[in-house]
Image (cartoon, rainbow, N blue to C red; front, side):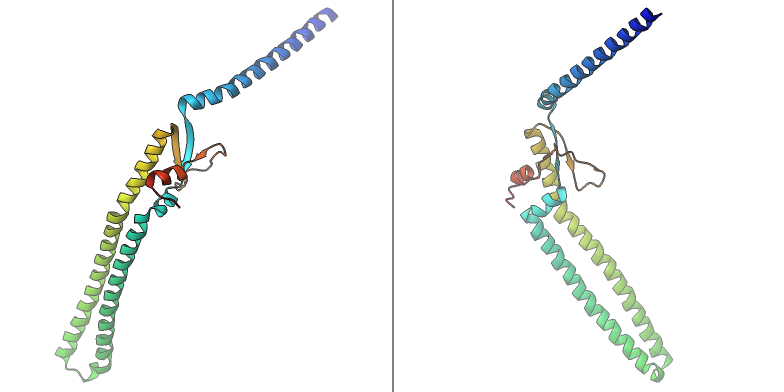
Length: 189
């Protein structure tokens, strides 16, 4: 019986030594394989597409053009609202002395002015959004193409965009390719 317990203890000891050696060997192989795998498959990198878009000189001009258009619409809307407010004030001041037909005509005029102001606001908003799309979308495409080119040139497996809220973690080993993409875009800042 003591012989069996001794054999069992020796067997378990040998098994645990063997398992420890096997684990150490597997771990050293995976550590040694990592640079080889990186060389074979490439690295993971990340960028911030918002930072890249803001760094493009054309973005400043596009933003300025959109702001100027927005200001023109605000100015025109201000003129329309001033006209409406003056006519409304006159109507309220003199309505007691107006005949019924003049009162109805002025009320209709105020209603039409309100309708025109609302329609103008809708058209202005649509035009500003359209201009933003026309001015900014080509720049987004330019950034996308530069990111793809940097990914191919540097053999990155993928490039994560930090501007995308779905990315929850970036390993410290990841490569920040923002500077490379800025260089591809010809941006120096």
